[in-house]
Length: 316
Image 1 (cartoon, one colour):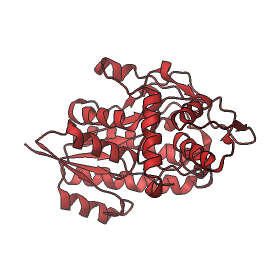
Image 2 (image 1 turned 90 degrees about the vertical axis):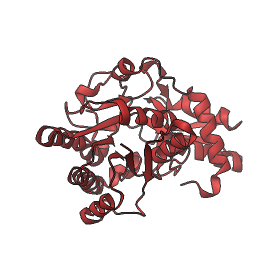
Image 3 (image 1 turned 120 degrees about the vertical axis):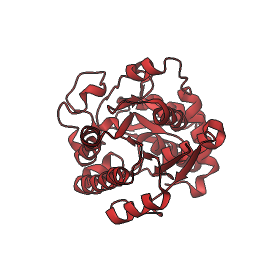
Image 4 (image 1 turned 30 degrees about the vertical axis):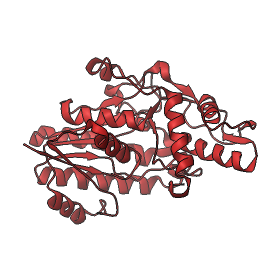
């Protein structure tokens, strides 16, 4: 039976990566892939979402669409992040249920984890206390996907699940310095500092640590989850704890990749956000012990090259 796979948020960072991985030989003959973006339907609108599902009649859905932003944008618009994401997620999941979709894989985020917690964090700990207060709207909306998945399974037997990637980066990211995420923001900053011959100023101390996952690695894992992973419980998709890097180390990797010879300065008047949110990939490793992640510096180099080449039309 052929699969029709609808990918929401299909033009974003992860959607583009899945599209590339599928095009580069990971797709299968019995799979038809449909990538949609906000231009195709407003997913905060229930009728438009239902119409999208009735038009494409997917058998499977990868749900990536969300209202997203970096630390400083989240702090200002927690209500907007909550409402828009709750509407998007409810519309997508309920349209999937109503149109008989066999499987939905939604995308959560490690920022949903409790602020006060022990490390490493694993899949069983998602709801053990409030998330970090800076982005509570987004975090709680994402957590509710897990609640809803459980509900669809218990009441209707649906196989709706979710993945929790750590910090994703790669080509087609949002490289906006003000409200993008840390790695693409740094890449853009290094690019500009190189152009102007100025120092590279990094917000905060550079000490916080993050697990970064290359979007193309994440895309390959998404295909595995869609085809093979049968649990409703979410799964963390991440490099190991030992591959955590500090913001300083990330900045240095980017400087090296872009051959930036200027000075590195830390603006400690700016907030750091959480010091760390180390996630365990033990569950992933039980399923896929031999999965090979792209080495961090290689992935950074490829992303910097993509940004430099596509500077004119990159999101920034």
